[in-house]
Image 1 (spheres, rainbow, N blue to C red):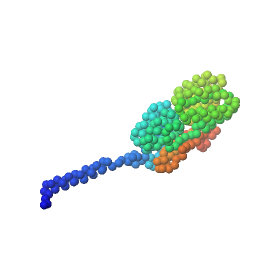
Image 2: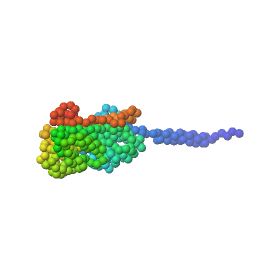
Image 3: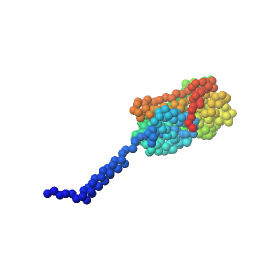
Image 4: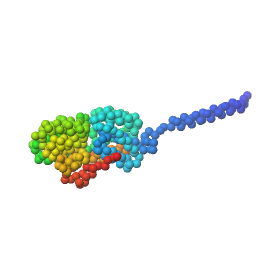
Length: 338
């Protein structure tokens, strides 16, 4: 015997089927995956994290990174770092925040070769590739590439130029920067290697750290210049804030121009010093290319291309004689970001 379904039951069945279909549709829409990479406008988000943000050097790195992003067209630069280069905890915090926000890649200038290893490894564990630039990172974390000056060779060039400036005989001072800064440690070693080849030059001080600010460097350089003022013939400082402080110390002690001074990285005051004789030479890097090449390397990696493990951006020595000629003129006055 067949039973005929009542109209009410039929209507109820139809309503249940429609509700189920509607529910499936809603569930499918809300569970559809959001894009794993990129910003809201489809661009890849690259975090660029400098050692600090206050010096001209880093502003030029920023300009290079932005130029590369503009050229690529599909990259957005997220620029952030600690204000001062001795704020390692602050830099780690910046990187951690970028990891949390799931950026597509990180370009990092570690201000300590060991302290940034763990957070770099953390980025890798989250699938975020990292390019290291300017200053090296110790073993323990993967990186796409290392984009930098050959800092040891830069130190060698500084030593050779200072030796020439004092006639390959006399006594010299080297001011260190801070412990754990791989780039400046390489410069210091390169300088000492160059001095070791000079049989008539004595390094009378090479173990003093000038610190990360111009004021700290001025104080330390003043102490050393006063202590050795009757002996010292030359002095070398290894980065922009140290050099600015050292030049001020030379001026205040009355030794500017008398004690030959080789700097590393330019500033307006140091450049002027080449013209007035208080600075014998400035070892130059190319921070613009560091930013540019770091972003390009990260982009190539994400596109599945092979990236060189080390990308050198060059090192040069500017003097009063060559400062107005290529490439020194451009390197002494690199483009900077606003």
